[in-house]
Length: 338
Image (tube, rainbow, N blue to C red; front, side):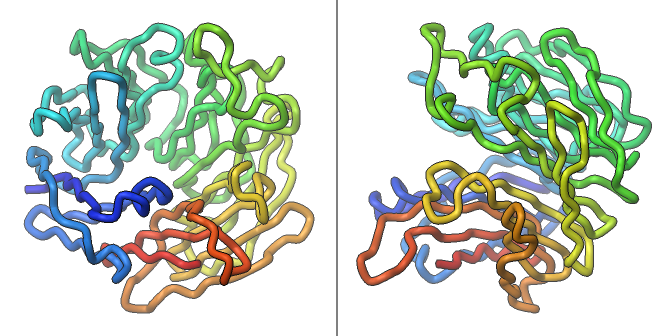
């Protein structure tokens, strides 16, 4: 039996200033979950049981009324959990193989006021599920092998979706028309993870009267890029507007498991930085034009790095930086560097 857990933190200021991504590494019978010392005040708040195999992905959606978690699992299902009611409210069973990624769709939320989940699977499809009406809305076919990481565009209200696949390609999809617009080629092995650069310039944190993110004018434009991490041990940067590969980072010695752009809030690093986590037990920081900038070597006991995120913490006059780094590992440990 696999399950999803919620933890609460007694330190409200910490909870306000830190955004932690947890990676849950589950087997059918065992859950390993360890928190760093600084989170020792946490307590188990809720457990959602239902999945019968590894939980590969979780996402969170909140509104004025509802709080939902969605999860994708090795048991081939996408499940939705009502946080307030502490129960499963939906189980979508349309995939015929492992579900690697499940995310709430910002496009459907902003444009149609619908709570919709997008999921990617080893069955070579991407599917969209309507929570309220309990039905499948769309199916994207086009990849020739299993689909791993997915990410929505930070512009145009999340209209565009990027997917990485076992077929060694990245597909760009128009969610509105359900059409594939471009295929990015260059990786030599499975593309496990993808991320998109954050909103830039005067688009950042601005909305129109309908609550939709401002458009970028063209698909991408303004220098928007995507980054991808692969089992070929490289991270590649792609220009969305021109569809060209810009940069290849190749210093990792094992599979790339996670890539993440910096954000505009990180004053000392910014959106031009990329973090990568690898099965080689290291995290590397890359800056455009400077190649590799810094290496953090993870604890050998933690195994490979599986997910990571920049954290914006409260400024401390004794420190030169208010930026922390959080990563999750194969062992289930979550570590914070600052």
